[in-house]
Length: 240
Image (cartoon, rainbow, N blue to C red; front, side):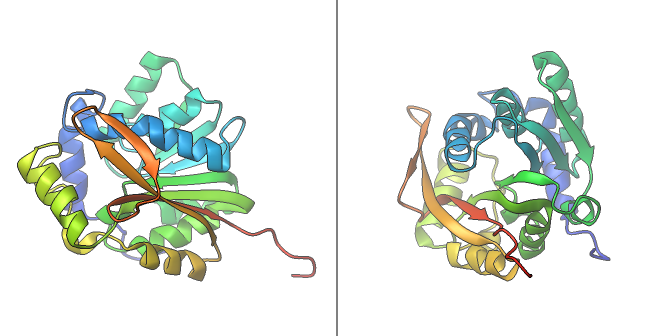
């Protein structure tokens, strides 16, 4: 477990400030609302959700966590943003979906719940922490042998800078300015290297395309901007 929390206080403050508007489909989290159906379909198709024990790392206000619960998963959402968690808990009461939320770091949870989950999800979170490799390693510890881990993040290249930062934040104002820092974006090769070092095997990489005019998202083969990555923890071999 890390001595220094793997968290950026400025990022926590930013998401807490916007937390009351998390469930507004036309607010600053509008892209997440629009992306969510495609994300859920990908996770369900690749890893399954019904009756699965799932931990959603960096759950925020609970958008993905509730979506997975609605498809039959038993979901624990974790985050370190207290206002976002408060919104998540309140919305779960209103929706009637059973989701458990905890204010705990993924590294700490991995120390106490090693191998207890069928599926670990961590979407749009890695690019907001100082040490994303540590999050990947903790996700690998949380999932059981044979279980699945799904990440989503943003690639780091000229195209992603133009579309995900300049276009989305400064021109179209789909996201608040300063939501993403270019230096913290993550190439698929980097994510795959961290995952391999943590004992995970890559099963799939897929792009996530978003049309802000139709407000529709779809999974594609183009991983140059937003992308999803599906990993699995191998089963322990006999005699290991």
